[in-house]
Image 1: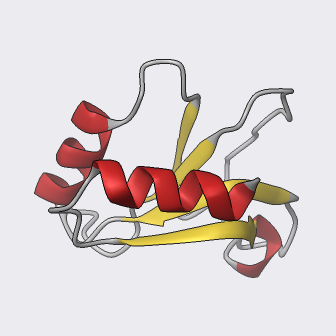
Image 2 (image 1 turned 180 degrees about the vertical axis):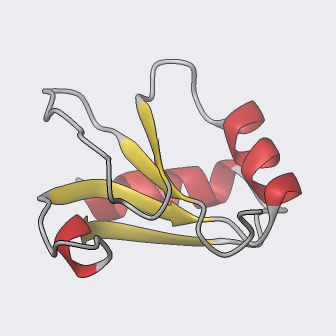
Length: 91
């Protein structure tokens, strides 16, 4: 399902420059190395790429934005979801 969601998002967003990673383990990117799987992890190339993703993403797709992941809490849900990581271009 995660791979299908990532492929569907990629097809819907041909100008996306960031990376869509299906079934990403959030523990791999968080400060305390905790966190479960995200259906899709989106790492935008820059702020414009993040804006493009948010504009084109289906309205029914839950999106959780995380920064350095020090104070992030995401509750699992039954619907497919995506997580956007914005560490590369933070100010």
